[in-house]
Amino acid sequence: MQDTNEATSVTIGEEAVAGLRREWVFGWERVAGNAPFSFRESLGRFYDWSLDGVMLYDDFDAGHRVGHRVAHSAAECGAIFEPTIRSMRTLKAGIVRPGTFMPVA
Image 1 (cartoon, helix red, strand yellow):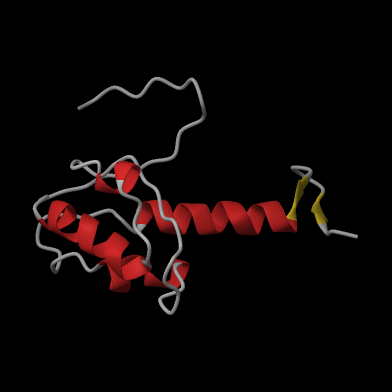
Image 2: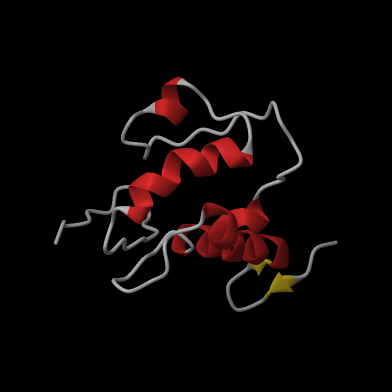
């Protein structure tokens, strides 16, 4: 039997997954003056660095390397994203519900 938060009818497991999602999404954020982005330092706890042969996909990669040539390790995924993220002075992340309009500032 799962524990349930009576006020929201959300199971504790769902809350835990939502919390991990928030940590991962906002782990990408950068503000001017931050140390250079390190994929492993910022997001490393979400990946198994001992595995090769995994398939990691993300359509954010400007070179579409991850979408068309899937990264096969956490290190390879990090190597794809670090140069792009490091070139940004600021990166703001967010989580929206499907169908929500987000204006670009």
